Amino acid sequence: MFKQFFNPARRRNRAIADAVYVRIVAAARQPAPYSDWAVPDTPLGRFEMVGLHIYLFLHRIRGEGEAADALGQELADTFFLDVDQSLRELGIGDMGIPKRMKTLARMFYGRTKSYDEALDARDLGALTAALRRNVRPDATDWPQAAQLAAYVVQASDELAAQHLNVLLSGEVHFPQAGEGEGQ
Image 1 (cartoon, rainbow, N blue to C red):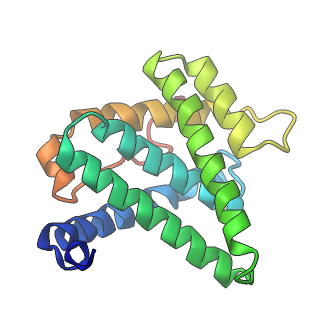
Image 2: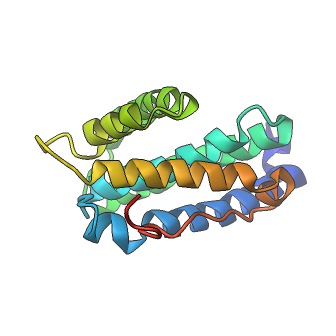
């Protein structure tokens, strides 16, 4: 058991996952989704945007081999550790953390399924509906969901164009949100 904690490959994956996570959070915190597309700038809205970018990265590296799988697992672990820490900073006590983490994990993995189906089919309407349902469940109408969906497709296409070895080294680039408005 202790060998896995002292494993140089695991430490390297941790460092790479941390580098990828920093870039994902930067992409998720771009101003356009919050200022122009009406994504709520709340803890839950930020969870949705970080989760969406995590999903995009995981979607890109899925099926790319053992190294990609290991990085994907480290990245998911990093994300949920960050979510746990954020809940604690929001004042959620130790007794409430496991229940909320279970709920948030279920939310994340449920979203990845609906995003996968829409993105794999290149169905912009289904992707828009999934984003509307997940990011703004309180809104009866959210026309900017189509702009976010167009960004997701653009980001997916740009990630697909990035060489796997570059991604596995911790370099990942997301498009500028709001670029080419009229998306």
